[in-house]
Amino acid sequence: MIVEELLLSWLEQLQPASWRGIPFAVERSETRMGRRTAVHEYPYRNEVWVEDLGRGVRGYSFYGFVVGDDCYQQEQALLAAAEQPGPGILYHPTLGSRTVCLVGPITTEQRVDRGRAVGLRMEFIESGDPVYPSGSTDTQAAVTTASAGATSAITSDFLSGVGPALTEGVDVVTAGVAASGSMSGEVAALGSDPGLVLSAVTGLSGNYGRYANGNRTTLLTGVTTPEQAIGRVITARTGITNAGALTTQLAGNL
Image: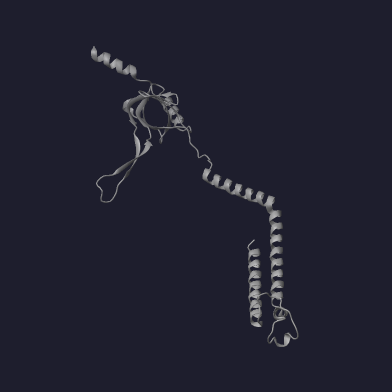
C-alpha cells in the first residue's frame, strides 16, 4: 500500500511530454547543464587554469514512443514538426516548458514486437533570443575629432578678428625697420664726412695738412692740439656707427 502511494505520488508530479504541441511518451530522458570552460595548460606547471566562459548549453535528450491505433499518424506529425524552422515549445516531464531547437533529426523506430508503438529518439538544446551586432560610438575618436574641430574654429575666429591688425602691425614694423636703417646710414655717412675733421681742428695751432690754412677757431672744447681733435672725431664716429647698428637691430626685433 505504501509503495503504491509513493508510486502514485511520483507519477502525479510528471507532466505530459510534447514537442510543438504533439504529445509523446517518455521511457528515458537525459538533461545536460553546466558551465562553458577553457582549460589552459602551461609548460613546467603541474596546475592548470580553468577559464569560466559563462553558462553552458542546456540540452535535453529523449528516448520515447507514441502508441495507439494512430501511432503512424502521430509519428508523421512529429516528423513534420521536426522540419519546421526555428525554435519551438518543449514540455519536459519534470522541468516544464522550455523554448528549444531540435538538434539533428528525430529518429523513429518501428519494431514488430512492439505492435502499435513507434520508438523515438530526439535531442534538443535550449534557445534564447537572437543577438545581432550593434553599432556604438567610439567616444575617444569622437572627442579627438571634436577637439580638432574646436581648435580649427578657434584659430579661424582669432585670425578673422586680429588678422587685419596683425597685417597692419607687420607693415608698421617693416616701415620702422626700413626708416631706422635709412637714418642710421645717413648718420653714419655724416660721421664719416672729412669736413668734420677739418672743423674739429680749425683754429688750432700746428700742422693741419692741406685741408686747413689761415686763421681758424676750434668747434671742440678742451682740445688744444690737432691730435686730440682727430681722436675725438674718431671716437664720435665709432659711437655713431654702433648706435645706428643697435637701432636697426632693435627695430628688427619688434
